[in-house]
Length: 513
Image 1 (cartoon, one colour):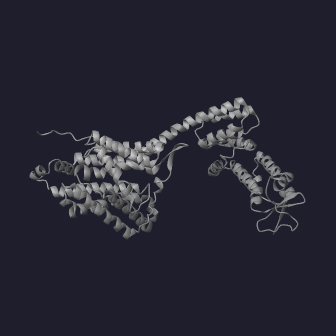
Image 2 (tube, helix red, strand yellow):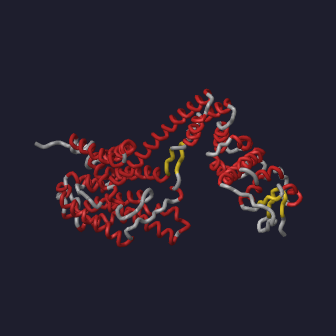
Image 3 (cartoon, helix red, strand yellow):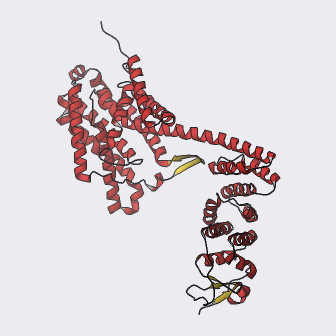
């Protein structure tokens, strides 16, 4: 049965209970000039009655008709009277209706609905909606949403006709740290005519700007530490193959790539066979990336590099050729395009400390992971038999061989260890960027810079150089851009090597005359 619902008889005909929207007000919202319709909508909204919502949704859906100065609501699937007119909705009215519906959602019993409404209304702090905002604030029980509502109420007061109320709102907003609040104050400041209110707004703008500046500084510092942790992970493997073994491994970047693609393969396996456990694929990808990269590194050492120890130019050329072979192999197996590696759910999102300071979970995880790898590597080299043999072979190969150390085996194990750590770095990099055949090329130069600057064979120097170059790079990028920052870092490295040829943390020893 098709019903034509006349708003004057809604209680009897529609089945909707307790309508507060009068027929006259409904007609003003549905028909007339835009200014009059918006004013009528604001008047109805100020009452905050839930009965306004169904009418506005019917208006959005095209189920409202106007006939003889009265608004009619047509049931879904019904037909309108032939002589009734359909209200016109221009862009302004559509925006006002969307904002009004969001305002009504502030009174919802569902927290998610209220949070979504606040996100919609944060840039629409209209003084006409102030009664509704205050009503929602009085009913709000969630502490987080109350803070947002307080800011919304203060923002609405900035549009008030009362200068004293605008001043009080500016003083209240001065404690905010939200860039959107500062932008709103700046917008109102340009049109403010009252001296006292204008001074309060200017002070609020300055206070919020100072607070945001600290957030920007903290964001820059975190970005530098994040980049530094990535460089540290990349350089740790190189600290063994180059720093301890003296091999200029130009294929180190491709070992990162191997680790990243091993992570991709584990992800695909989980997606195909264990989709319910997809969020845990990274726990298997970590050892897989280490083992695969270590095996590739061991094969490189046993087939090519073992014949080139003590000949740095030949190792450079040979490993450069190996890097080309590895890149072409990946292009053949996986294609030249990048592959997608997804973050697990627990690494998605970030920790919002301030409105302009969010620490991504994947970056925080890499910081912690780099610290764990560093500690593990230091303990392995200083507290295990393998570490003792590596250090012995590095310092005096002939003497180590004389006391029974299988130097060839130690070389292979040490090179595999450095390669495996590069694979772990590739696994970590897959969580923050694209994975493709050229992945390693972006980091190989920076990794050598870290090892050379920190001091060959010095783990502590690698740590300081990695984190220092990361922070300094971000500082210079903010000042002069990425290209000039890279040039400046290279010049700095040249100057340091001129003064300290063995790096910032040179190995201590005695000279023999």
